[in-house]
Figure 1 (spheres, helix red, strand yellow):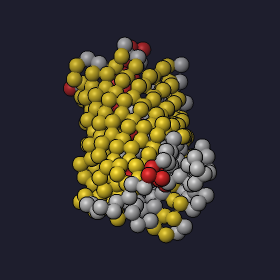
Figure 2 (cartoon, rainbow, N blue to C red; figure 1 turned 135 degrees about the vertical axis):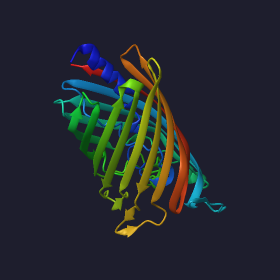
Figure 3 (cartoon, rainbow, N blue to C red; figure 1 turned 90 degrees about the vertical axis):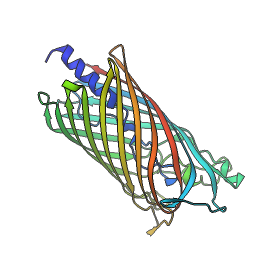
Figure 4 (tube, rainbow, N blue to C red; figure 1 turned 45 degrees about the horizontal axis):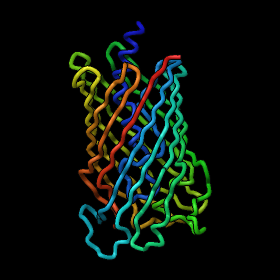
Length: 317
């Protein structure tokens, strides 16, 4: 395969690089789950042998409406006015063989705040490292002639600290404001993609499952299933438009063997995105999450919107 053909295919993949970094995990407390980041997992397919991919993104999310079931709650006794976070992530991937890729993710919350009506609680700002991720991805079927790929991955989520964060006054940080689960977990992915080069269109189906273990306080975040469908189309040279529909189902959290009442949800999100290739080397992407269906167990603060900007680069070693 010529170098120019390999480069053109890499560039075709670039619009997808950071979409998947925005699918990851629940956000440790379910008040602001959409676009929740734990790592910066990128394009879930495998890389070419001896290729390396760097991706970074910044995301801001805002939540300000309580839901009970599928309807907004109008309870005047709701605990919080809103919740919001700002997050930066980094992902590094390396193609060990043409079918096996290794991946490492990490991220940092610049702020993770719940604006409680009690001003003492609002002082809690969960800034710090989130969970990390180590993953191996394998291409079960990679056909470059037919432009089809079916691959899967298995990964270990890990905390950078097992100790839950405390506020400046020494008290335990509110659960909704913590930057990490402080617990280990497992992640599995399955991906199928098909490219239609004659019409510069690519379709993509991603399934992801996550299971979290308990932290040292015997709190366990519920399992998460994410199913996502993507369609990408070149608009003009170097500019791609991407539409994503994401379905998230999050199980109930468990505290010392007892299910937490106000946890668990079903969320459907529509995400338009544009991606631009810079000098054939970098990919700059912008996206905006729009929740279109919410069904929350108990009563929970739910996401209104989130947006992200990302930058990615592929290199051949």
